[in-house]
Image (cartoon, rainbow, N blue to C red):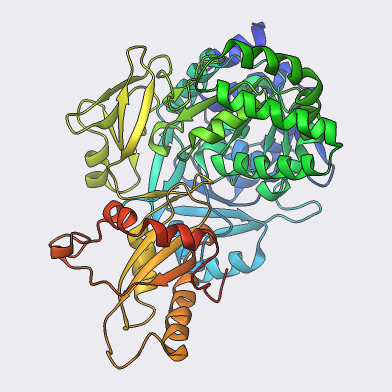
Amino acid sequence: MSRALQQALDAPTVAEAFELTAAAHADRPALHGADGRTYTWGAYRDAAHRCAAVLARLGLRPGDTLGLLLGNRPEFHIADAAAMTIGVTTCSLYPTSPRDELRHLVDDSRMAVLVTDDPERAADLRRHCPGLRETLLVGDGPGPLTDADGTVPYDHRPRPDDVLTVVYTSGTTGPPKGVELTHGAVRATGRAFLERVPLPAGSRLVSYLPMAHIAERCCSHYLPMVLGADVTCCPGPERLFSVLPEVRPHWLFSVPRMWEKLHTRLLAELDAAPEEFRRGALRALELGEALATADDADARAEYARLEPGHLAPVRSLLGLDATRFVHVGAAPVAPATMAFLRALGLPVGEIWGMTELCAAACVTVPGEHRVGWIGPPLPGVEVRTAADGEVLVRGPNAMLGYRGRPRESAEVLDADGWVHTGDLGELAADGALRITGRKKDIIVNAYGKNMAPARIEARIGHGDPLIDQVCVIGDGRPYNVALITLGGDPGTGLDADPGTERIRRAVARGNRHLSRPERVRRFAVVQDAWTPHSGLVTPTLKVRRRTIGRHYRDLIDTLYAGGGLTPLED
């Protein structure tokens, strides 16, 4: 390990790690924009210092909150780095969030200044959020984030227990909660991760998930500040597969849905390949997937013979030939997905964590992945299960608490320092973790987006008094669907077009108050009565989501296969 990397690893705050790394790697590439702009680490640091001067002159002081409503672009990294160097807390927002949710988050986070590239959103938030003093607009040319000399009007050195960032995550009910993460927690997580996964300094990485997602923030923003990594900003997940061959990353983290798309893309590419190559590649994949769960000497020998000529070229075509580690996480991972990645010849593993744990608590040891298992815990992190099977975690990666919510904080982070994750699981003798279910009522879709189903159901259910009950399904799925029962006016028949069209319009109205990932794409109206006697709802008429999922399994599968009604809005 180089002296520069060791110094950055030992730094007590993210801000200090950034300064050390920028000084050590000043001439190396740090950030690449989609428009071709490149910042070296030295230029990145200088831009952050100039931006810090602007923020300070706007009156931001240690402990204040800077909002970031930006896509994946270098300006995000610069503004975030600028804020932390002067002790200002950052809070990133999803650009796809609905207007009323953005207003709530700006107020709830106590945001004083917002940096955004959306002038319409900026104007709306200035009008409706009295605590928001200023908005800075980022455009295609020189903008308001720079100061001529970059001289900060005061000096402040952040401390390990200062709040570095507030990251919002959905609870089981009500509005999202702001998770406060300190410099010390983020640094401890980064050190432990690099001990488990020894990425080299200067690693090439791609930033493509929203920066409001804790996993992306850690993977492509905070971790590079230790590694001196070379980060390419990809405008969005839909562009990832076109960017990978240009970057050829050394490490890639992704949510399960992206790998499912890769599988589909690869099969389509193979359909157009020469017949002999196609047959060999498909046979190699078939053998590799089988070997993921059961070793067989003959199958292993045949796979070894086919892999160099049939799968190595595929990895090169996809831009994954230089990848040293691949990790999947942030959402439930199907065993078939992990088997496919292993069959493709990728060094794959899983990450399990949550926003309250700086994204990572258990991480697969490279080369030791077992399908269905994650872990063991990162160095310094303890994991155990409670009497009811809930996974509890304790370590330096734990959150400080939820912003402005002491009661909710105490419910999750107990007096002994254990974080009650809401996931159910079991531990193997070697410390590996298997997630078996979810205690908390929350949806994590195939892209890793956390959503409170009660919030979605409330929006859809308020769309029309004819709607009685709504159950949203979407855990581990690419989008949400809903099962709807009817009450209200018994004179409206479901067999008539006006009745179905009325529910369709109601779902579309509800969708307009939800972010894109939360929206219901398809739904079905069911005739059964959901009563406590049926077992589909509790005595207080709360839906029993798992029971409904089992009871209507075939109908739900039909909705995901393209059946059912499609709402007016996507």
